[in-house]
Amino acid sequence: MAVLRHNVNVMDSDGVILASGDGDRIGGVHEGALLAAQQQRVVEIGSEETGALRGVQPGVNVPIRSRGELIGVIGITGDPAEVRVLGDLIRVTAELMVDQAHAAEQQHWRRHEREEFVAQAATGAVERRDLAPWAASLGIDLDVARLSVVVVPTGTGEGMGGLGELHRSLAGIRGVLVGRTSPRELVLFSTAHRAERLPISVSEPLSDRRETIRYAVGRAFSGELAFERGYLTALDVLAVGRLIREDTSAYTFDDLPLLALLSGLRQDWRAELVAEPWHRLEASDPTGELRATFQAYVRHRASPTATANALHVHRNTVRYRLGRIGEITGLQLDRLPHVMWLYLGPVVATGGDIGG
Image (cartoon, rainbow, N blue to C red; front, side):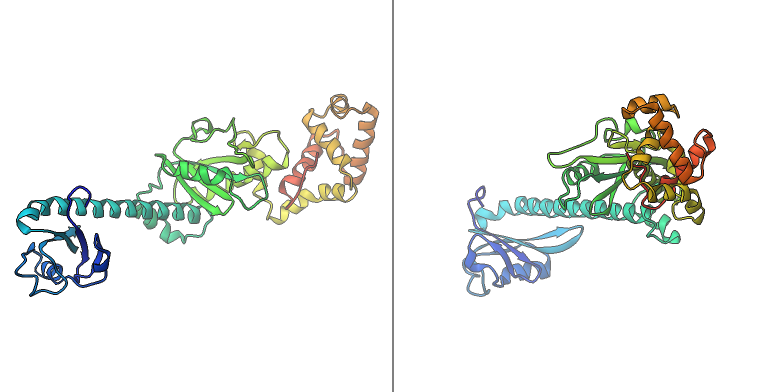
């Protein structure tokens, strides 16, 4: 209206005025617009016709369409001889605005649907027979291998911190599929097959003012089970990364392949057999001193001297503690298979913690 210098009315296909420069007319029926909608043609109303039609003033009423269907009428108030030339201009403008809004809505819906697919496929919530058709409808090629990443905030608060911002920034990147598996967990799949080519930095974890973002990179898979398997490997990497207390907030499958795979066996009954020595050690080590010593012992390649230096204790103290661990667990820590047995205990034990 600021450009045209005339009042403009917007009516639906029933002639009801939805919007107008004259607020008193909103909600009334414009019979000229109703006639334009029913006959799908431009209806001009001169001063002599205003008495014959209800709710009208002199002007031009132009039907507007979207995707081939009539959706309403635009009316321009004024002498038809003056405003007639503006009819096509305002019709094209209105139709472009409607089509643009529809395209934005469709894009938003498609992105939301793709995110829902990613979340459900990753968590195994989609029936196998429905997976491929749903992916195809969204333009997702299951034959393309994608690298999986799980992202979580380290804090315990309800605020999303940098996770929400990261979600929004990743959603528009080509070659990236992203979804929310929980309010505080983000999963993404990228066609980049190497961690250093991911759209997030593995070497420099994202953080904001409140909390650090922790993430784990799984394996790249293709096929119908690619999302589920990728998600599970990333979860296992995250669990192991937290467990071994590495001084970092980013973990990759390539750095922890064996531990990550074994971590996935936590629900198997055989895992509990592996964890038995560790559970015995936990029960007899309320302060965590023995577990911290064992952790240092493993980190320093089973060297009592290096372990003693790291813990700032005498070497004989380390030997005594290792002896105590052996007595409690029934293992001989000068034998590599026994060291590995104890080391894998917390990896496969549900809720295990290697301490330190």
